[in-house]
Image (cartoon, rainbow, N blue to C red; front, top):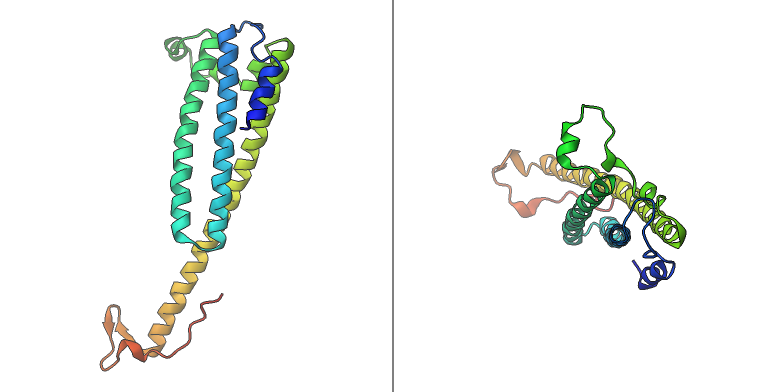
Length: 201
């Protein structure tokens, strides 16, 4: 999340007073939550770009690092989502005990979207919050798309590597290097394998 966007959100009056049943503090918390979600989704997006490049180059070490960074980002986003649930519960004016006491199928006030809550605010603060919510939706959409691309690329790489292993296995069987799994044929030295393997496919 750029400093310019943060400053712009403030300049447009995110903190310009309570409305729609929200207190000034709740509006500030909503702003901070939106900014945090945008920032961490943008960081995750950058890691996904690196992951895709590592997959394209079949760089196992970089792939491993990217996976670890994605897991860390996921944990942070889970924390922010917990904050979102707590804030929505507070704004709705209900306790967790009250929610648990409701019959199955009752509307869950914590399922409201941040956008729907922002729309309850009036004036410049509403416009700024809705702008942040729109930015969050956009970056979340990009993240989902890139995760799908990486999932497909990962599956393709696994299929490719499996194919290479099968080629190696067939070639070793063809040359008689192994009479049976784990045993070399009598008189056959490992350096005697002369068949060419296609390692460029």
